[in-house]
Image 1: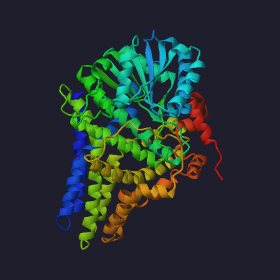
Image 2 (image 1 turned 90 degrees about the vertical axis):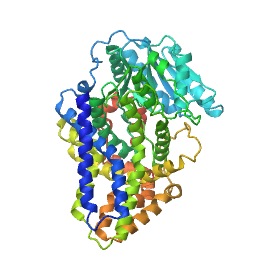
Image 3 (image 1 turned 135 degrees about the vertical axis):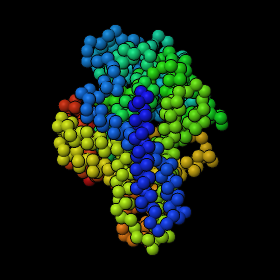
Image 4 (image 1 turned 60 degrees about the vertical axis):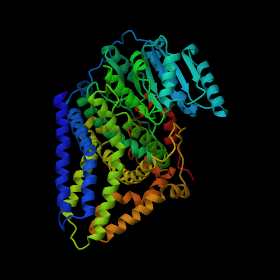
Amino acid sequence: MAARRALVVLIVLLAAIGLGALLIQVLAPGGWTVPKLVMMAAFAGAAPWTGLCLANGLTGFVILLMCRNPVQAVFPVADAAAEVPPLPRTAIAMTVREEDMRRALPPLRRLLRDLDLSADGDAFALFILSDTGNGPAADAEEQAVATFRAEDREPARIHYRRRGTNAGFKAGNIMDFLEHHAEGFDLMLTLDADSEMSAAAVLRLVCAMLADPTLAIAQHLTVGLPAPSAFPRLFQFGMRAGMRTWATGQAWWQGDEGPYWGHNAVVRIAPFRAHCRMPTLPDGQHILSHDQVEAAVLRAAGWGVRVLPDESGSWEAHPPALPEFLRRELRWLAGNMQYRHLLRLPGLRPLGRWQLLQAILLFAGTPLYLLFLLAAATAAATDSASTFPTAPAMALTVGWFGALYAPKLLGYAEVAVSPVKRDRYGGLARLVSGALAEIGFTLLLDAVSAVAKTGAMLRLPFGKPTGWTPQNRRERGVTWGEAIRLLWPQTVLGGLVFGGFAASGWTATLWALPLAGGLLAAIPLCVLTADPRLGHWLRERQIAAIPEEISARGWRTVSAHHETALALLAQPEPD
């Protein structure tokens, strides 16, 4: 692993040096000013994350392209397609809090039924772990589970437990289950309310745990469920391409010191219960983002954590519209930034500390991006006498975005060069149209998200503690009034930024469009990507269609949650 990790560090350094050299060519003409120095400092701070994106994308792409069995190359596992060995007792644990049980329960029914058909179903039991507060929501939840339980072939294997408080958030919910209800179980499959897994994927993880008794967590790569709305449809199309290469490359150099994402994973109960009780933070708050901490302390205790970078059989739902997406991002930001208090936890391995630091960098680099943009606009407005360095600026933009989005771009390339994979996406033309639509969408979205996350980081020292709040997972429209109230800061900032670039001429303004165009487009982007008519238009043309949507056979192999999504996809355009 030392040589692999050294190669990753080398790629990060080369990317930083190469992009830094291009930036110097852009900034040097006309002499150095304060705004230009700020641009250099902001770039230097963001360079590690940009280089890591390139490193994971490149290594993952090479493995996916060159290896006959890429998954085996990074995670040697037992073959779930072979005869299944005697299975250990496994608890399927789904955490819920004020969720729509009409959506959460059908995938569990399908999973239990398929496990009964493909393996020893008696080895599995289902636990629905609720943190829903008292009131009508709790009553409806309890009634839904009672009906679900009564309809099962073996009702005694389905259990429901509701806590009176949300102490410790999701991590506290899981630990309470392990301490009081998990006796006699060796493994635990962790699921969120929007999670979905096939029996084959679950058995593959269980077999991996049997094959390697040093593993504490086997984490499955998770992709987005089919979605009728434009926002999750475009978002998940890019995430699917990017996460496949990212997870493969990362698994190659991290080995059994990989990350844990908190769901769609199999956990060995004994070490998890012994080591993963979350400490409180110095200010007395509970840890919100628990999963990476749990992985780090397990590795510190000598246990392995691996990611299975296979996109088949493991799904989740993405936020239905931009407001829900931003709320989720800000909740994750608040949780990840708590890790700064944990970087000095005693006993952590170097890569365990890096995992926590990487989770911080995922968000900490965002204000630097915004700072770079504001400094660039200031430089353009105050140095209008200098000629805009068009060629170096374009080279820098292509190089920077190429490195930052390398996992996604190379993920598209990996599909494009494979006839079999192209066919799963409906052919090259459909793949390209989806990729172009998604890339344009992402450029707009990233600028909007950067402002929201920067504002949240500035408010963190003064804000109230963040909790595990209920989430809206239903498709919905967004009114212009709601979008204006949410996104007026982005729009105002966009006007100021483009005013600065306009002072330097149309060339500089055009150069800024991919960097900051999303600020001016924030409000219409929010409304249009939640509009059912745009979703219908994309579906009719199969733009950004994932393989499950392309293949009718694929739809029949996935669960009831997908069937619900298929029904939504088949709905006619509203009047």
